[in-house]
Image (cartoon, rainbow, N blue to C red; front, side, top):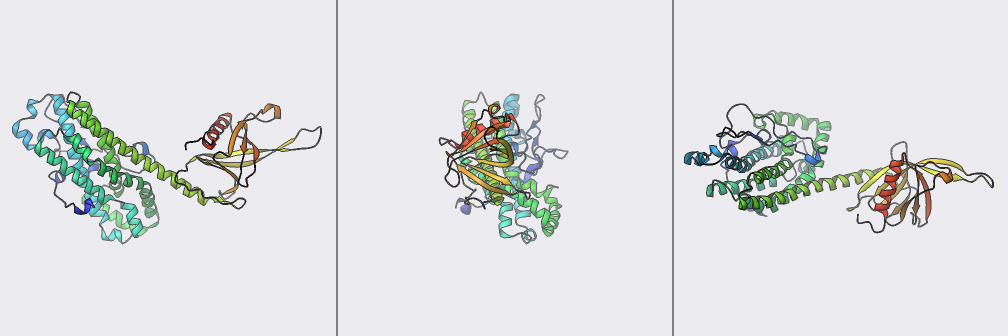
Length: 427
């Protein structure tokens, strides 16, 4: 509702900055002992294998930095000679604070290109269904609006106090909105990337139009992918910028206190983004797995559950004892068996040649136990253990001797089954 009431107000900084993909190197001048302030972040951090993205911190174009890249170049600062009266450390603090503003303006610039040039492209929209367009761009427009309001608030703060010492308080005010738009956007990025790959592979018309759009000067040779991954890059980098401010503001008690709170709040949002992605990956894993399960020999049960997680899976060997009569030791036979251990369910299956799983039995939490076996006394390999189903799919109890590929994997299976399938499990 708030975004509908919000009317766009032009930022004073957004047109003075490069695209966010190219603007992460900021040079600090004016003091001989000041080194370049470089912020280079891998966009995905803990999600390295999930997102295909360009790296922040790519080299900027040669030549002078854009206007207002540095705090000491701000007309008010230059006109009053404020920087010359400050120690090098205080100058570094001011440049670190100011980089939050200029980088947000650069980010806003890239978001505007993503929306106006790509999302609102009539030709590109004609290549996509409504659901595909929604998946591809998600709530990017809302992200841009939230970023725009945040940038204007920062600029308003500069007008009141060129030092912007209340930056922590201003960021904290916007954290609820950051959480509202960033968490769902980042959570959707797995499906976004998956759809992008599918469209490039299967939709020749989309690829043709996309390549022509990406060749336009407004993109500065940046691909659509690099624009779509920006929100997670930004919320992650914002935390790093604040951490740098905190290191430089140790003697400013009021500033460091509010910035410390802002670091914590932004850190929680980043954690929620990561958690959202992790949960979506787990759900997707269950969706794919359910499609591969056949319940011809047992009563069917749903695999997908909001709280269910696949903990461990793998092929083991089931050991059978065939009695040969009095005076003869049982003959051992074996058969491959595949186990899927979830946080609240254990499936026992046979893997078919087509890669599907024929479910033979299952037990829920509190209905399965794993125990050690006196292997030598029974003439068995040391890698065997006993699986007890106290209540299987037809309500009966049974014992199954299983052989793991190694002693280490045997220990791991016993530990995980005990942990996940006990009645007291908190999973």
